[in-house]
Amino acid sequence: MRNRSSATIALATLILSIGCGEDVIGTGREDAGVGPMDAATGAPLELKPGDTFNYRAILTYRETAGAERNASYTMTVRIETVNDLGPGASTLTFKATDFTVDNDDWDMVRDFDSWVSRLGPALDTDDVSDLAATEMLADIPDMPPAPSAQNPKIVPSAGTFFLDPRNMETIRTAWATAHQAQMPMAGDPAQNGGNYLLGFSGPDESIVYYPADSRLRIIELHYDKKGFLRRLSETIGKASDPPAATCRIELISGP
Image (cartoon, rainbow, N blue to C red; front, side, top):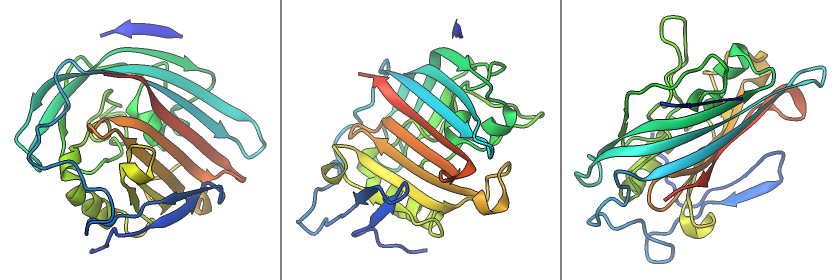
């Protein structure tokens, strides 16, 4: 372990059973006066400079023969600046101020295909940039870019940690359009333990290092009503038929 400072889809009612049929997620939405409304568009953004978030990630890859590869990391993310221009236009910048890595036998092949891996320093060779990442808060969550020899992994990466809850209607529609072939789902705080939910389940062409019939991804992103990530859970492949991976990153403390 080491430490360093440094198209059109109506999202009315979707019920999706994932994770081998164990969890049923009701993502009902009735903005015609029955269900909960989104944050008021005229309210100020609740994310503030200096807000600090401590995350922990756990990654497990199961080999065909039953063996496992494991890694974990922690990462502290701090908001540096906020430019609140209202829904659809606001941005913020953030940095990683501290991290730890505990790598058993995780490697670049396992690292490449995982959203959770790409978000943080899952490899012993990963480093954390001193530069701030800029988050476009009206954009939908997006997996960090694939690392390569010419463009190595950049930690932290924009696209996952923050969004603008005042813009959730637009974000839901864009998310459903982007993942229309992957059973997109969305949920309001009243149906999801107080958090916004975005997710999908289906084939994912971005997966490279798995057999063709195992290039499947299940994703759930849970966001606090203020707009920061509370948990991202991920399954790659078929958990009952390895190779497969289960990964998650979750908030362990925040503002």
